[in-house]
Image 1 (tube, rainbow, N blue to C red):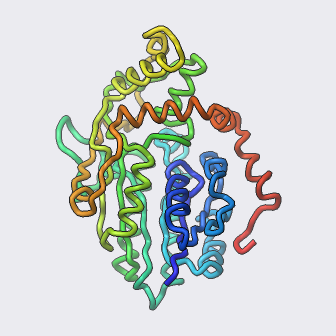
Image 2: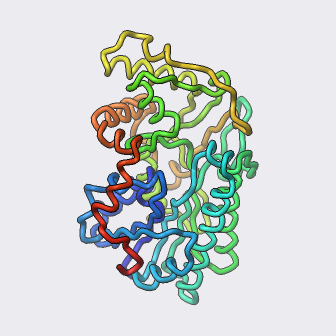
Image 3: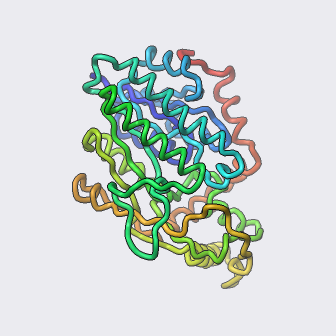
Length: 356
């Protein structure tokens, strides 16, 4: 069976790196990138592959079942890599319904479409769902999240992702859809929309704007370089076992304040500023509701069973990330100004409908 792979959310941060990897590495696969191009979807991320013969972009929304059914039928979708999601905790606190609709209802729409399209011929297909370590809740001072950790989400975002994980497993068990789930730690790297900590602070340091730190900055996270995450998704897609869950992490932990101080130091060096100049921009703000203290991933399963491990340390990955943003200030300017949204209109003069 020829692989016609639907990658949802493929114009987003993680999704664009997965699309690029699959388009370039597997010329015999047809990669269909489905993205609604909401605020974090940016086709400029994929300029380098948009003319490849094995790549198709479709602007559509996973909240539209009829559009999904038409795409599955027209492109004979054999595999799904599902990344489309609302993904920012702060936004989920302000607007939880958006997360419920996209992350839960949208995932169920996609599962139901796959169920109908693959009915009676489920073997050879795969529904690969990408999720987050935030579904596990928060850790104390010690311990790591494993694939056996119980779910205990604390924000509307993590609750919506936990629900989508459960629906993927439920559809897999009930309707015999082959599925895999992976849960990853915090991603960082090139093409990250500047609302998350690292790209936001890089942009703020460039423009000498304040660096708002929640609480005392003691929240701890495991950090995963996005290109390593794309490699892990590739590995799991091809070598993972159906019905299994794989945790993907960077094998490191950083308190936010320590990360921020390292970022300030590296930015001062690259911008030719005096040591401590960027650190002086730090301001402490009221902590957000439901802010989990610590996440840390045990990624020994994917390492031991599938042979994946990160290619860079956090310090190396952070340096690469800073260099990318400084070398791609036009991209950053387009994103912060909203000009990137005009790229779709310039490249796709009339809105593309499924089959259009």
